[in-house]
Length: 236
Ligand SMILES: Cc1cc2nc3c(=O)[nH]c(=O)nc-3n(C[C@H](O)[C@H](O)[C@H](O)COP(=O)(O)OP(=O)(O)OC[C@H]3O[C@@H](n4cnc5c(N)ncnc54)[C@H](O)[C@@H]3O)c2cc1C
Picture 1 (tube, rainbow, N blue to C red):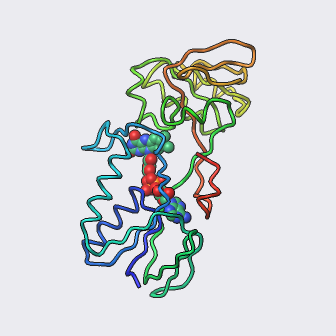
Picture 2 (cartoon, rainbow, N blue to C red):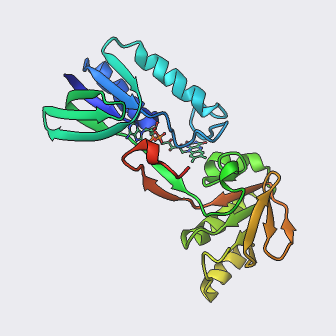
């Protein structure tokens, strides 16, 4: 019987585990290894770790946790959890069952992207959601914001701090007069021809054949809690 099982050994799960280990608890971390930012080669805006490969940050954190003798780490997915205070049971997808007095879920979220050909392959490389994480590196170049819903209007208004912005509505939003005025006030160009696909680094091929070159693209991805079984994750 462990004191705590932490489901999800990403940054949040490991941070929680660290404090529990330092409080002399026995901790089992179970992790399916699907960190949200696993598509990005560099992480930014995290003090002391700016520009570092996020996989390296996670590996160092895990190594530091493993120095505590009361840590157990299990690679794999949790399929079900049941029980109540002081008597929880967790079943892994590989059939292992573990018991703990407390459960802590740090399973993160997954990102759902619009079904534009070429977008998903570039996620985390030239297609992003967070300008604070990846906007600076675009060097004030041309930025395309591909609409995924009404929140994308806000994203397009935010991004001019990082470069010249074109808002591609892609049939995902209709712009009222007030939204058009707000975008114009921020110097955002509007393109209402649907997007056909993404080409090369981040260029957009439109349905009418035109090609718009960009240094990077942004999407307000839809975040959803992870589905229960990691094997069923279809989203990025
Ligand atoms: C492309 C991209 C780039 C990013 N760049 C940056 C950046 O530069 N700087 C920055 O600060 N933030 C960045 N982020 C945000 C950052 O990735 C998240 O804030 C961070 O990953 C959240 O940590 P977390 O521990 O909550 O979740 P995650 O890192 O997603 O970890 C959750 C863990 O739980 C595991 N898990 C889930 N369900 C189960 C289960 N049933 N059984 C076992 N394990 C399970 C997963 O496999 C995963 O390992 C970026 C995000 C994306 C998408």
